[in-house]
Length: 170
Image (cartoon, rainbow, N blue to C red; front, side, top):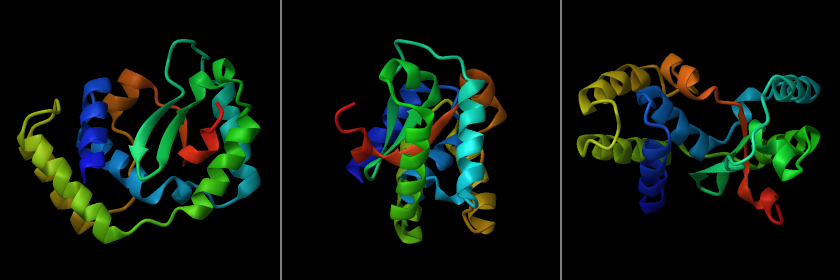
């Protein structure tokens, strides 16, 4: 769980507007990948291209954020600077999703690490806000969640979750 502690601490530093659901989303993606988004391959690729076209490309931002467990979030805004085509990222996303299963018991342990770090005050949200969120979240069966409005307003997230191994040589 040391890797998860490091990932959470890094994200708390990089994304101080992160709310409880964003931290949970981070852990969820790091355990289960992004495959919950894929129901139709062609539609998945179309959505990626549309999102890429509406994303302002920027230099100087990292290509990816580490999620642990061999997974990363690849930022669409960094694709042009990296030379990665959206079609390539789309294939990696689909292939990564097919190779990532995850385990609920491991995910719940990660939620425990999140709570322990919240007790230390490393996040902008309080441990009581996290516990309140987790109470409802766990009762709902720990589903995939979207980013909070606060996170979206602060960071305009646009990325795909892939296995880091695809970035070898980038």
